[in-house]
Amino acid sequence: MNSMPQEIADQLIEGREFLDTNLLLALDGQQIQVRSNSEELLARLRGYFAHIVVESGEPDITVLAVERDAPQLDFPYEDWPREPGKTGRKDACQDLPGARVIHKVRTGMTFLQSDSLRIAAGPCVENDNQVINFINNQYMTWLQRNGWRNCHAAALSINGGGLAMAGFSGGGKSTLMLHMLEHPETAFISNDRLFIRRNGDGVECVGIPKLPRINPGTILNNPRLAPMLSAEEQQQLQAMPKAELWDLEQKYDADIDSLYGKGRIETQSCPLRAFMVLNWNRDSDEPLSVERADLSQRKDLLAAIMKSPGPFYQDADGAFHQGRAPFDEKAYLAVLESVLVYEARGGVDFDALAERYLNL
Image (cartoon, rainbow, N blue to C red; front, side):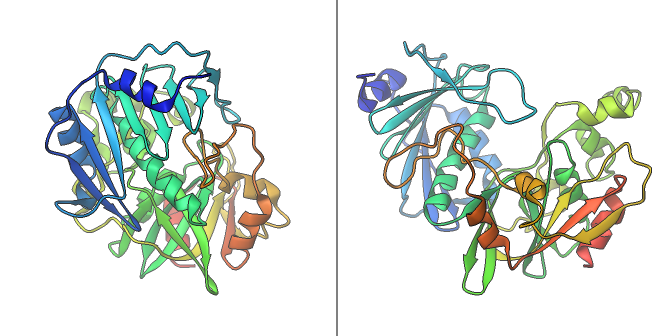
């Protein structure tokens, strides 16, 4: 491909003018400015990121979000490989000199990613969650360039320390984390992406500003969350078979501030105290058990923790992550060797495990 990134940027923007107002987000270590031609999109993003919005500062990077029809770039895109258990086409990529174009197959959204150009283009308002993810991917790139390891985990803090939880797809880590948030001294760190690194003799963790996206089953079985569904929706869901409800993929954003109160989001890094890996079985009649685990001897549990950087990640040398690149298991083990790791087995019992984990 001979297309240059700036040419593609011009095609995505097509002369559209950006608003004078913008959005400035202050994360732990990085400030991100978001500009757009859509007042509605900026208003939505301002509401979503309310806990990290600042009115002044020096941005480290700028993200452009262009509200428009779905771009039609003439590229022979290559499908990005899905994770085990996931089906259907989702992302397709085209590499350019020093840049990558990522096309969202289902929505038509198109993203240009490079060290100098960060553009989201397409029906952004309709797909604001993908714009949110794109913004978060910029912070994730910064974290990984600075030595943080990407984990497929939820986490919260209590008394200044982080408690993380991982599990295989659909294992219930988000549900467990939200049950644990009922403790008034806890604060939300992350729903699905947790970053860890060694810091002296210990390990620190930090999340990304992404609210929990939860399934109806999680909402229905938590009295605090139930008002997110109408009475009619609750009736319909309660009539579904339990197994079907568990597997239902229909995401809702859980607004931590409105559900749990202001000040319940941890925006700074904190020491990581423990990691719980959910290896339980919803069909099991066995009682819940929690035991220490040695990740160096349990690569199956380590696999549940590690997370690919994804198609948006570009390292400091300008190289983009490749879809089938292997995980650096040794690097994860080196970070986690001093962290208490537990394995939850037996039948699923969120209330019991929440209480046990908070008191370990």
